[in-house]
Length: 184
Ligand SMILES: [Zn+2]
Image 1 (cartoon, rainbow, N blue to C red):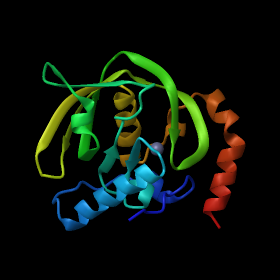
Image 2 (image 1 turned 30 degrees about the vertical axis):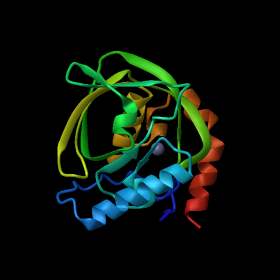
Image 3 (image 1 turned 135 degrees about the horizontal axis):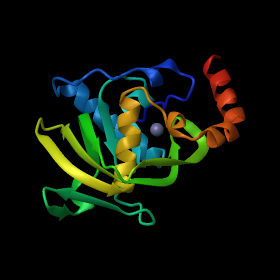
Image 4 (image 1 turned 135 degrees about the vertical axis):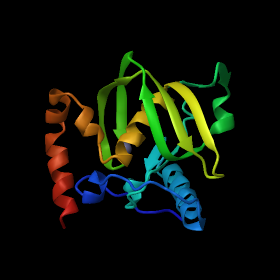
């Protein structure tokens, strides 16, 4: 089922997600619906807050984005991205590399907006999967960026919070309009 994507101005986007303790049918259904919703919107990531549910769950798929490559490692071994996509991550925790990288970012809750955001160039991610198993992996490239963007959502942090003042100022008019629409 395709869910409605919540837009900026809706307070649920600022809520910190509850931890997912049991992977029950409700959680599995939400994951399936989030994947369907992300695909239909041509997104590379979606957090549960963006469909109005403040829990620690995100879906990511960077497999088909050829102009912005990603790399993924488990232990010392590089693994094939396609084998792990789409990712459905529960209660993800990130450790960020010290190296930083600036790249363009958009968000499905902020239609027709994008900005350059500086983030860690690599992350180590630890999370629970839908089968109840834990996964730990390292990521770089677009996957590292998507993970940081989505895990931010799970804590009520939005990409406008990571923009420099000039980028945010240039979007001020659009942001105001979105906020106004959300109050209707
Ligand atoms: Zn987003």
